[in-house]
Length: 200
Ligand SMILES: C[S@@+](CC[C@H](N)C(=O)[O-])C[C@H]1O[C@@H](n2cnc3c(N)ncnc32)[C@H](O)[C@@H]1O
Image 1 (tube, rainbow, N blue to C red):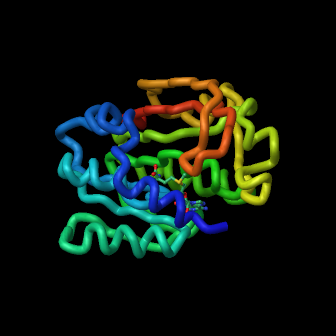
Image 2 (cartoon, rainbow, N blue to C red; image 1 turned 60 degrees about the vertical axis):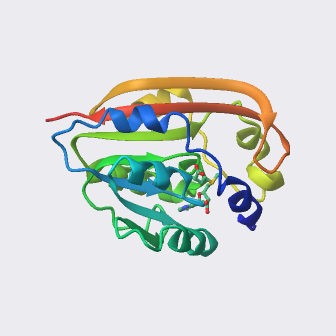
């Protein structure tokens, strides 16, 4: 499927509203290095650059990386690569963001990708991301785009288990009818998590 309509619509969108708070949870004594996983058209990379993080962003879709490379062409602190959650070489980071992207990671790649995300975080580093819950219409219908784009969903206890070795600082469940960015009706069931990797 093409993500182009999504990128066209979100290119000028404000960043994920929770990201401002999540980035503020990174201690001032940690290096300001962030990873934007599945960066799309770069709305979250933009906020992270404004907050002085050096950003390593990736997306599986070459159109996303073309858009971001142009958008940030004069910015030497934003780096983009075409990669999947599985193939990306995660640098050591104090903040890793996966805003509405990690649930597109293929199920068979999820565990290894998650281990890489976890271990790339410096102790004290912060993860912020969105998980799909079991009541989400994509989880029930087999995926986005009438099931042609599979997603992975997690029950609340499964999400919490992913964060062993972290302190959960924010856990927000949302369960509501709305639309996708592309205008289709959809039931959203999401867990947004902000968590800090333990120091030991
Ligand atoms: C809903 S968009 C979110 C984009 C961005 N994070 C934002 O909040 O605007 C999901 C993004 O995840 C990317 N994506 C899907 N599967 C991926 C994978 N396996 N590895 C990396 N990125 C992936 C898509 O190409 C798309 O750009």
